[in-house]
Image 1 (cartoon, rainbow, N blue to C red):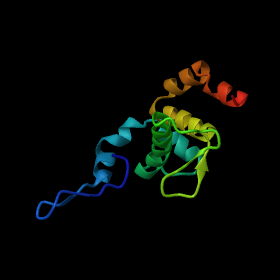
Image 2: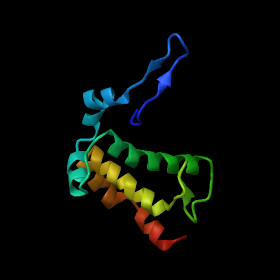
Image 3: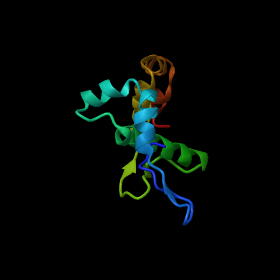
Image 4: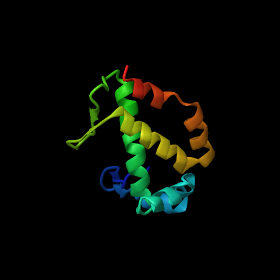
Length: 121
């Protein structure tokens, strides 16, 4: 629901799903910490900003769920860019800060992911 939306249904009942309406009405409130983070990065906190952060984490989740190797990173769909697990971990921490400041703090102190990535197992 963070992407641009598309069309659904077949003619004559084909309708446009405009997720921007959902963003402005409800979803923007799901990311209360996003405003400060976006401002710090000279970005606008909007649906596209949230989608960029969430989609990379979702792609990593899909790769892990299918037991694909992450050693040399993994390609993002439709792009010629390889993303490392470390970059997506940073995105995940960024997303945690967008969702809740306390969640980000908790994960920063409790998670061992950064430590494991540094060890390069």
